[in-house]
Image (cartoon, rainbow, N blue to C red; front, side):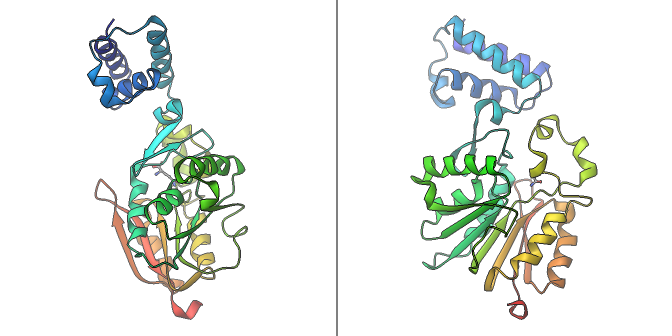
Length: 284
Ligand code: GLN
C-alpha cells in the first residue's frame, strides 16, 4: 500500500472510533514511524509503505483508539513552536497555556527581570519564557521529581543547558530561594475534585497531581496568591491559568489580598483563561 492509502485507511479507522481530528493524528503517527514530519510526508504519498511500517502504524492507531492521548504516544508535544518531550508524569501542554506565556511576555525586556514558574510540569511555560526572552532569569518549581526530570531534559534539548532555567523540587514556594521576582506564573491544578471523573478519557490519563485542585479547584490558586505576596517585587505580577468559570472568584481573592490592576486574557476560544494581578505595595 502507498503512504496515501495507509493514511486514508488509518484516518477512517480513527474517525469510526470517534477520535477528534483523525486525519491529523493519522498523519502524526505515520510521520513519527517514518521519522519525518507531516509536511514531508505529503510529498511522499505515492511511495509504498514497508510492511513493518504498516504494522507499527496499526499499533499506534490501536493505542489511540484505546484512549491514550496522542502526545503520550508520540512522546512529544509542540508548545509555542518548541518540540517538548512529554511522558505520563507530566500534564500535556495545552494551546490554552500559550496564553499564559503571551501574557507574561508583556512584562517587557528589562535586563534585570526575574521570573518564577510554579507547577512547571514539563517546563513548558518556563522554557518558552526563557526561549523568547533570554535576558529573563527564570526559576521553576514542581512537587514532582519525575516531572522535573522531564522539564530538565526539555531545557537541555531546547535551551542548550538544563541550567538555563533554575529547576527546584518541592511544594510551591518551599524550595524557592528568598529572592523577589518581577513575575510569577503558574498553571496549577485547577479542576474541582468532583469534576475529574467527567473529564475526557485522554485527560484522565494525565497525572491527577497536575489536575485536581481540591473541592472548588482553587486550593493551589489560593496558596499561590497568598505565598506570591512575599516573593514578588513591588509592582511584580502574578499570572495564573485557571478555568474561565473560576475567574470572577479568583479576582475577588486577589483583590482581598491587596493585588491591583487585575485583568484577564482570553484563550484561543475567546474565554478568560489567564488572570493577572500586581502585588500591592502594602503587602511588601
Ligand atoms: N486545562 C486542563 C483541562 O482542561 C486543566 C489543567 C490544569 O488543571 N492545570 O483539563
